[in-house]
Each structure stands twice: as C-alpha cells, then as structure tokens.
Length: 471
Figure 1: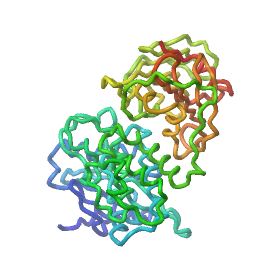
Figure 2: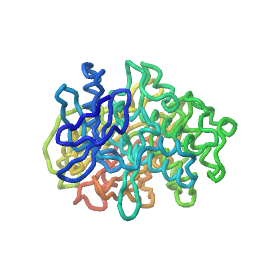
Figure 3: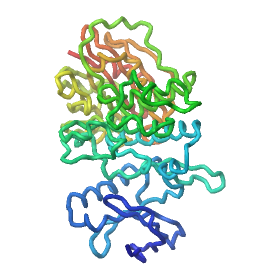
Figure 4: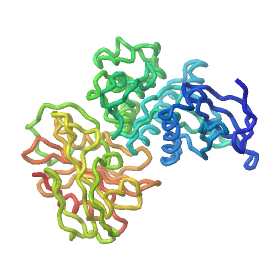
C-alpha cells in the first residue's frame, strides 16, 4: 500500500488504521499546525453506491451531532479518483482496544471509563441514533489539556449507525461478533437502543471480568451471571446484576437505553450518591397490571414518528388559550401560540406489537426536536411500561447525563399523581422537565417531557400537566 503524499490540503504522515470499509491516515494541517485523522473509503468499495452513501452518512451524522463526546468532523471531500474522505479530529490517545491489549485496566479506572462510554452513547440515543457496533476499537481517547494530562473519551465509527425509525428490516448482518446483540443477526428484527445496551454490557464485561471472553455474544441468563462471568476483585457486587441485565438475550429484559444503563451502573457503584427518585406518597397502588414486556422508552428528542400541520407562533405566552388537540386516546390543552401533531412513540411497543400512541406540541411541533430554541412537549401513553415499573422507576431510567437534576416532586393534576424531575442543562435546552404518572382506572403510564418557554413562569409545568387527558 503506497501512502498518499497529500489528501486535499493536508500532508499525510502515516497510516493510523485499516478497517473493512476505510483507511485512516494521520494528516497535518500546516496552516493551523495541527494533526487530523482522514478517513478514506477503501478502493474496493468505491463503486458500491450503498457503501459510499453510508460513508457520507457517517460524516453528516457526526457533523450534525457535533458533540464533545463524539469524534468531530472538520471537513469532507473527494480524492481525484472519486473516493470520498472525511477529515476528523485526531484521537491522539489511541483506542480502548490498544489499552486492553497492553493489559487489564485498574478497576476504578475501568468503571470510570464504562461510565464515560455510556454518557457518549446516551448522546446518540437522545438524538434517535443507534450505534450498533460498540467495540473497544471504536472507543477513542483525545487529550483534553496539554498541561493537565486530562483526556476525553470519544465514541467513533458510526458507519453502521442508524436512525431509530430506519433501524429495522436490515438486509445484512451488522455489528461485531462478541459485542453485537443477538437480534442483530436477524435481518427482520427491530434493532433499537437496547442493542447498544447489549454492546455496553459486553464492553463492561471486557473491562471488568477475570475471563472477559465469556459469556458468548448470545447473552446470558441474568440469574446465572455469577457462574458465567467472574468479575475482578474490587468490582462492587451490584455491578454483576447490572451487566447481566444489559446482556440479556431478549431485548425486553435489558435496560431501555444507554442513559438507563448508566444510571443503574452509578447506583451499583455508589448507591448512596445515586438514589432513585422517590415514589409519590399519595399514589394509590396500581393493581390492574397487564401482560407486557419491557420496552425502550425514548425522550421526545428521539420519539417523533409522524408529521403534521405546522403553525407559526413564538411561544411567548404560556397561559392556556390555544384550544385542544386529540390524538388517539390522548387529548391536550394547548398553550397560546402552540399547535400539536400526532405521533407514535418510536421504539415503544404494546403487547400487540404496535407502536404506542404519542403526540408533540410546540409553536412548531415538527421542528421542536431539532431546534433547542423552541419550547414544546412530548406526550406518550404506554401500557407496557406500566406493566413493568412505576412512574418514579421509569423516570429513574431517563437521566440526562450532562445536566443537573432537582429533587423529584409529586403533584396531582386532573386526577393523575405525577412524579416530576427537572434538569438544568449547560448546553442545548436550559431546562428539561421529565414527568410520569399512572392513568386512574386504566393500566397505562402517561409520560410528558417538557421544554418550557423562557417566560413560562413557575406554574407552566403543572398547568400543562393539568391539560393532559387520557380517554
């Protein structure tokens, strides 16, 4: 293999790695005196339009997400022979695969790294993206301070990543044996965030087990984890059960997404520092449980499933006055200037296999998920979630990794006992409110995620919740 002298304006110094579909070169930007990684589509795939588009999709996705926990894209281009390339931030600290090859990583460090990896994958999940190929080679390290020695953990190689809406009905096997979930071997299976939870669990086993080769990628019985995998001395006892659930064979038996897995890991490592949100003292016992399975529960940023009419409006006024909107069994009172559109709860399925109902309301509901400046709310109804957990337990699965949470509170609105948790965030939406309650007389959980308007006032959340009705 002959190394190119230049790719675009970058001088090539050496080959960093070769994968199934691409080569990665270390380049130097003489103008900025900085190194970059340049990913070039392999020559033998250059005429496959499907692979070329997948290569471009990865660059577009990383550019769109543009998050410090993901490898960043600086530019894209084409070689003279027509092969596309992407200019990426150089991960000068190598990969997790390199570090594991050098020997076991100390348990405290391994636990910290697993938490950092979870936080990075949670970014993808919040944006409706499933990675599908979480392996040690796709976990990279980048220096975060020349003087401090700090480094950042990055999620890389999104070449197999899919938006949740398009993650089923795959036509080819996708993933790496030993880390990919069992359903990824089934061309017709639904592949959602729980597939990444499996990969995170396998990464945890690789980091923490005395014999990380077992269990096999098909998953293990959670009741037999202690006999299947022996964790190293110093690993908190509760971590075994967390890894067992994450690597369960059935997706329904796993955590719903990376944020929920991260929260459970935090509770197992430091239970006193990660309490579960309290259950409302006034909630009556819910006896009418229905048969169901655990399913992925997505935030509004990942839940939009149907388009609807757009209206204008600034969202400046928060008092109710926008009329009502009905979608299936859900009816909401709209704040002034808001409209709504029906949706399905992406990744959330009832016992009949159909997507469970939802709606989105905002001054511009179709734009709300993509535009952090817009206030709005996502409302979803789930019988399957009510069958497996409480409102407080459900919200405990929905932390926002990069935000600070206020203590959970309870409020009774329109006959529903709501558990409410508010998150203050430094990036994106400054305030995100998660709320859930059980519908009286019906075996269903109603979930509302709210991004209040800046001038909404302290009563906005309770006023909005009071306008949610379930028929």
